[in-house]
Length: 288
Image 1 (tube, helix red, strand yellow):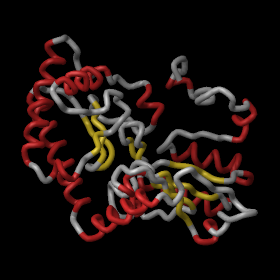
Image 2 (cartoon, helix red, strand yellow; image 1 turned 180 degrees about the vertical axis):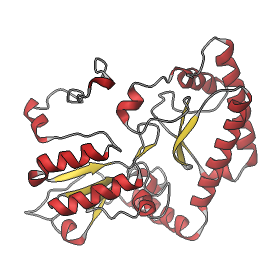
Image 3 (spheres, one colour; image 1 turned 180 degrees about the horizontal axis):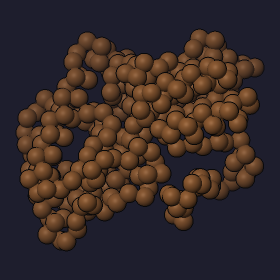
Image 4 (cartoon, one colour; image 1 turned 135 degrees about the horizontal axis):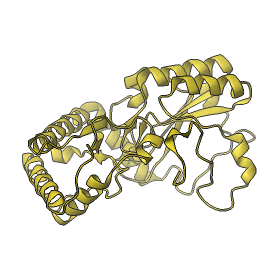
């Protein structure tokens, strides 16, 4: 995307993440920018009859929690059903963070396959593939292959069992969301006092911060946005004891323990205020 022009009305070139992937694989993948309804419909009209599956991450966990619009995900479900294509919803980051039913539950969309990861076991190594019964019953000898070095590892499964019990029996997810909302509100007060334009994306439990009037709504728009102020602020936050991912693509993930300790909020906001002022002192300006 480095040499790609957002206004060119063309797609970026598809390149493999790592070497060793045959170039012919590109012919099997069709990409479309998130939240572009017309492009999604056009893609299905051209390729729907021979598509195996559509993969979507409604909250982009590795891109600032940019969110798909509810209507966009619902359209994806309708098109997949119409053309006989399996819908895969990626909840590796959002699953059991934003709600007991994940982002798919909040959006009212039922996928054919869905994936979850470490949040299921509160950080212990685990991954989950779930889906419709008829799909899942193909995971057997002579059907879809599935294996893993730590499959059914007793420690991870015990952690998952207890984590899911806690989520079911306590208001942990509500605590996460409440803390996220209060943190966002506190950050906004700091930025508003300095007349710094900003916006948020995602869910309160895993939100993204942008220094722009409106956040991007797809990865391509993020790639061409100005995130220099955030990068500089994250650098200072580390020195102040607040560990945020310095890569501006990463959301701010909430922790229940933070929500139960009021000093976490006050200490974090104090550090944010200091970091913002340090960035301004060094001459970095937020985008207008």
